[in-house]
Length: 285
Image (cartoon, rainbow, N blue to C red; front, side, top):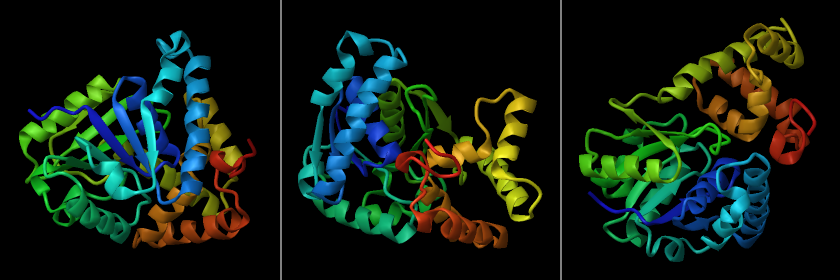
């Protein structure tokens, strides 16, 4: 079974930064890649913020120096070739756009060592739709994380018919060693387990707003009080990020999803309200 010691994460947005920091916290050597120095400067802020969160939320070992030590395990790079030169595993966490992902895999295929395993963190796209772009379908699969991964610590691992079982097992072991609870998916399914449950819920909430049935805050209030859940669907949208919600909705052929994409663009995205990351989305933070 391949041994994974060096991790590269492509994309330092909300979830990409969490994946990188979580692995670094658990002792992996991590390189975080993004497109330019400005993006990496923002990533530094996210990593410092995560160190503080791990301490304040009493993640085991964080207050004893592990949170700060994790920062020393992180290297940042805006050069893709440099970022993947020694990678045992590359986790791609770029926006949910098929051609963007395919393009980056074509570039990776030329730059990464032949032994490197590629994994997509896509929440909606099947790895089968991307595997030919990788040039190594036997060393490619999906690993999907939930947001706030230090608490919601699942890692859904899903291969294709071409994925080498030893590669699958190595990624499951990596997930476990980086503090996650591996969820092994036996068969390809868009949305894995988590989003197969979550997305219909969020779509139902979006439909209630689009139809004028109720407002986001009333829908969230209903869900929290009636179920005891800590957050409602529109609070979840804010955490995930409205750009991600827009990209997923805009890519769907469903008329309702297209309408929700337009609603997000007109009322929030065009106004710079992208969710928690910008301090305002459906709510102010």
